[in-house]
Length: 401
Ligand code: SR1
Ligand code: MG
Image 1 (cartoon, rainbow, N blue to C red):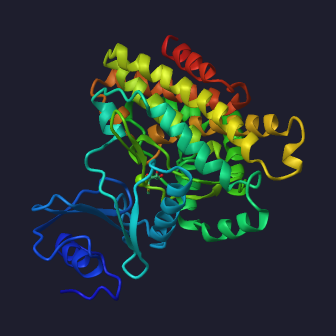
Image 2 (image 1 turned 90 degrees about the horizontal axis):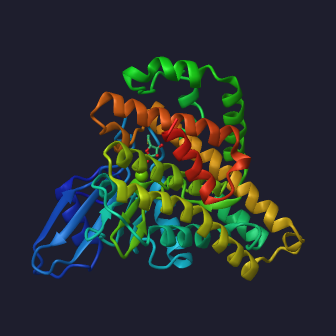
C-alpha cells in the first residue's frame, strides 16, 4: 500500500486503498470498485462503489499539470478552494451542491457525495432533454451564494477575511487569458478556430478595435471588482441534473469577482444548447430554452431584490436608488460576460460539444456566426440587456438575419 502522507497522483487502485484507510464509509466486508470518471479539463475524479451495498463516494484530486494541456501547471491548492467553497455554498444554498465528507491537504483531494443518479447537464442538453426546474434552481443558487458574500450583506472585515482565503491567482490567470484575452488576440497561438471560420474571425473579432476596448474594460473589472464570492466557471458542464434536482459542482475557479460572471456564463451556455437544438430542428427544446434564458434573467432579478430587501446590512446600501443602480451594474456585467463566454468557447482553446459536435459544416458555421455576432452586441451594448426578453430577442434576431 502506498503512503498517503506524501502527495502523489493516485490511480484507481490507490484510491481504493485511500478510502479504506481514511474513511469509515465502507464496512470491512465491502467489495469496492473504483473508476476514474473525470471528463473536465483540470482534475481527476474517481467513483468508488461498494458493489455489495451500493454505497458510493466521489474522490476528486488535483494533479500538478492540467488534463487539457501538460504545459499548464496550476496550483494544487485549488482543491482546498473547491472543497471550502462547496461547504460554504452548501450552507447558503442547501441541496444545490454535493455534500463534502473530507478534505485532505496532503493528497490535495476531497471526498464528496456521489451524484451518479444525475447527469452532466451539457450531456443531457446534447440529447435535447428538458429540465423544467433548472431556471428556478440556478437562480436560487446564484442569489443565495452571491449576495450573502457581498459587502451589502456581510460585515466588511469578515468579508475581507473570506476574500483573503479565496485568493485564487492561478485559476484566475486561466480565465484572464482564456476568456478575456486570447479569443480577441491569438498571441499565444492556442486558439482553435474552425477552419472555415478563420477569415471571418480575423476580420470581425481580432480586427475590431471597438470590441476589444470593451473587452479590456470587462477584463479589468473581472480582476478588480471583488464583489462576491463567485463560482467562477458556471457552465452546463458544472451542473449535475435530473428533471427534479440540480446540483452545482466544480467551483475550483471560485474567487471574489463580479457576480455577473456567473449569471453570464449560465446564459451563454444555454445559448450554445439553443443553437445546437436550432440547427437540429428541435422545436420544443428550443422553445423551452428560450423560456429558460428569459427566466434565468428575470428570476435572478426578482430573487435578488427580495434577498437584498431582507438582508441588506450596510447603511449606505440602504440609500434610495442604490439597489437599482447595483443590480443594473450586475446585469451589465452579465450581458458582457455572456458575450465573452460565447466568444471564447468558439474561438479559444476550451470549446464546447454543443457547437463542435455539429457535423454539417454549413450548420456549424451558421451556429458559430450567430453566437459570435450576438456576443459582439452583448459586449458592446451590455447596458441594453436588463430583461430576459432582451437576450432572447437579440438571439432570435441574429438567428433570423
Ligand atoms: C485550462 S482549463 C480550460 C477551461 O476549463 C474550465 O472548465 C474553465 O472553463 C477553463 O477556462
Ligand atoms: Mg470544471
